[in-house]
Length: 199
Image 1: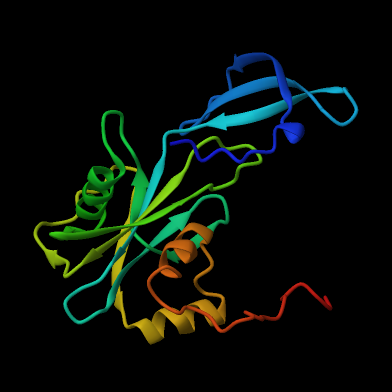
Image 2: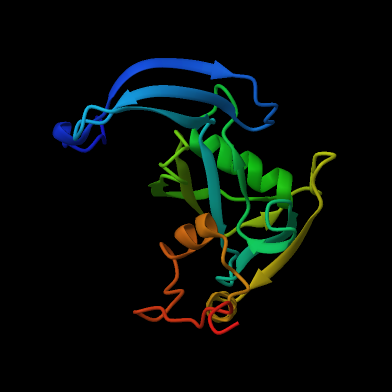
């Protein structure tokens, strides 16, 4: 079943599509030439093609969330987030979620629940990020990290997860999306001071 919205009057006509060498490890760079239905003007738009991703909310028997900390090159500091990664060719998202959880943390689960998917950034990404809940996780192995990974583990009570969101320590968008499907991670409306306002 297609999840494409029915707004054909807003759809742009694709006139051409080409791939360009970009030297990107995780993405293929595609350039589409499209026509704007509003004014018939044509534009080149960059799409970063990727396989789907997964994020895992992993809870132990005490209801604590298994979180990870790792250095993220884009922001230039260590972030707090949920385990996750890429769906390898031939995998479904559940298989990828279980593999990533085991590789990054050494933990496994026999109880999995699909939490749905989100579009990481539909402006220029073509993929989905699938969210999974793994319950009653337990240690089964050592971490099996790639040469480019360095990950620390931390179990957090639901209140600690919420506090880390409220303080701004946890702001990874995909992790927040997954966690918000399991925990009430913020008051509504969520309000936080912008540190750049008033500088």
